[in-house]
Image 1: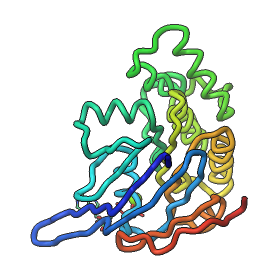
Image 2: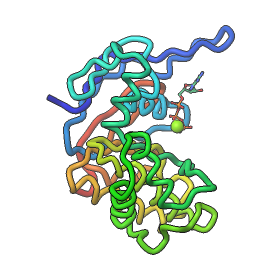
Image 3: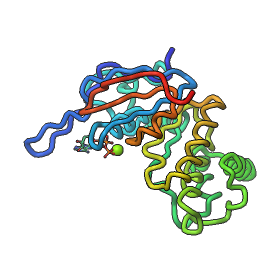
Length: 229
Ligand SMILES: Nc1ncnc2c1ncn2[C@@H]1O[C@H](COP(=O)(O)OP(=O)(O)OP(=O)(O)O)[C@@H](O)[C@H]1O
Ligand SMILES: [Mg+2]
């Protein structure tokens, strides 16, 4: 059973008298332990697809199964449950809370899961060690570089140990050297068994994944293996 199974998915927005087919008959399967890059120009539907895969939004029509479960059948509470258990998110703009330290930011998802006390701190410390930030745990986001902030965001995404990691332009705000470091971490997390869906409009970044899906105008125009591995 694939981890992600999408068939004939549509997402339509209506703004005024304009109808926008942000996703237009998208079908794809992603297996466990895959690393997939989704590439396409601005406005092609990448974030729309990721928001649906991440259970942050639902489709207008079609089917999305995550671990065999049909997502369209769940209400908001059930969806946030599934999200908490299954998915870690990394965004272009890091989305860290500026008043909290790196450690406190990484502890947040554990607070939502009801993990308390010493276990929570230890797991957050361990996640920060995995992104090599053990010596920056007490820094607030303003006291960290862009690449370090993104690594905190990755630690926050993996602290609950989700099988699926979704990254929407994780290197979009970083210079190329820092971006390469962040990608290296994503590759390592994939080697350790996590499924990774990486959205980018940078073909150099996409080429590093084992599989590249091209999307244009809400449609998949190619889906092929390749890249560095
Ligand atoms: N909430 C919304 N309401 C109306 N239209 C939307 C909404 N969200 C996205 N769209 C439209 O859907 C299309 C796809 O948007 P999406 O954000 O998925 O693009 P993208 O590929 O992520 O682009 P970018 O590379 O610029 O982030 C665009 O034409 C956009 O204008
Ligand atoms: Mg986008």
